[in-house]
Length: 224
Image (cartoon, rainbow, N blue to C red):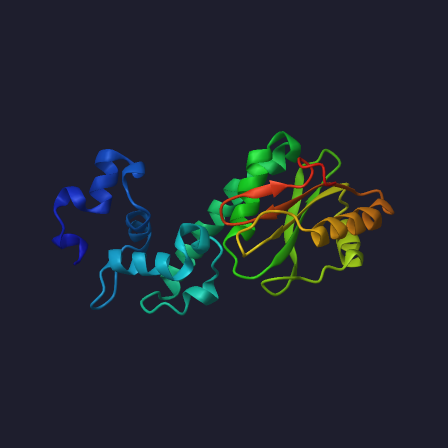
């Protein structure tokens, strides 16, 4: 069914204007961005297909233009618009961490890390590089591994910290299994990185284990 076939008060645009954006479902909001569907597929159906394909909004936020190219009906213009909006959303979540110390915004740190890592099906090790006032310089995915393990090289983390002139870091990696409990291997890796980074006066403030539903702080558990 196309949007014009829906009752006026059920069309996403009219619904948003009358009741506000909160009244719209994820697929309705995405349909407003896409504006039109394809032959034989309405825009609401196309929007729901995107959400189903990439695991909802969280998964879609981690999707790039190349992956969107695989969706029939998404031409270059639509792909560009979707990627631009997703990048704006990512930057909006990171902005508070660039203006004040990350330790003052623990919930913002968790949200940013879940956005970055939570929906991934493979294990990724990321580092938040911080300045002397513990504000975010950059967050980077540095190593990727299998579903169960990843190889992390302390020397590369040290070199990147020096390049960015970081004074501290927050480490993070995801557990695609859904268990946010830090393992003994996670604790050993943290200590190895602390020792390596200490040689160049860079502090490890925390190490988060991230899943789709939570981000557990090793510092809060006394593991650092």
